[in-house]
Length: 440
Image (cartoon, rainbow, N blue to C red; front, side, top):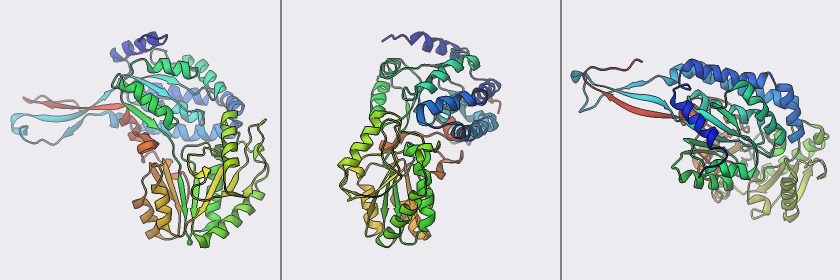
């Protein structure tokens, strides 16, 4: 079915078939352009960030620092990653017959990237993987951050030809139209519910997908944990973006001896946080619907609020950081919260904690605080998630040497470093006989 986007997509497909995306020097040039697009407009990005999410220059600069290092990692390794790999031979192939066997790295074609709203610079930079792998890109930023989306739409033509990189803005209607078109790969970051719609649309064209989703990320704290350290890391993680980050810790399972200490520590720390509505790293809830959802979950909870940084303010979309002691079947323990609320539930043992974790879908991340390596090992071995950090939160996502992605309902496929390059690359098997060889 033809849509208003067919000409853009066909122009990219024609350009891809010319081979114009494949030379390594061209890929590096375009990655450098992506860096320039961020660097040369950081002040405007910060203004849009403040307008959409209540976060400003410090957050934009932090995101810039992280993403530029990741783009540089692609640039610095691109030539090596792109080389054909010669493989050992097995019958019927043999060196005596002049045979050779290779894996050849092949670009996919036209990639659709449907990006989230909660990390605008990170979302733009996520196109690095498709670009590094020699593909063209149709980039759909989230309508939930309209100022950022409009800025990307304005800036992109100054750094890229549209037959290589095109920005499409709009909401559900525009995304639905895009999904009617044929792409060679679809990369989506967002909710599980929308991911199912995207998979259904992709299936009609047998288009492969990479889905970076979320999940109800558990935290287990045992009696041996350094409680002061645990609370510092947990509050830091929850304050970043008001808990609206896919790998943010979601709920806490704590053993009896540690519970009183951690509750007391939360009370003390939260009373000293000051006005979070003036903290640009905290920001605001993305829109009124998300604010109302959080408020409804709190009001329907059977739990007891043990600490809170203030009162909800719908006019400013500021929701306070709130710790709630809850029963295991509480409304706050059912779905991913994606906000600054921490349900806390007492467990009698690690076994009970694991049972609760196993009763839910596989999360994107899982966390544990303990001073015992054997407990940490058991947690890693007996939980299923996209990634794990012990005695901290989210830090496992910081290295380009570690893949980032979910499992089950928290995602399909992976990005980061070479894993991201490989996701948007086809490894083609090539056998050559009679003494013919590839240049390595």
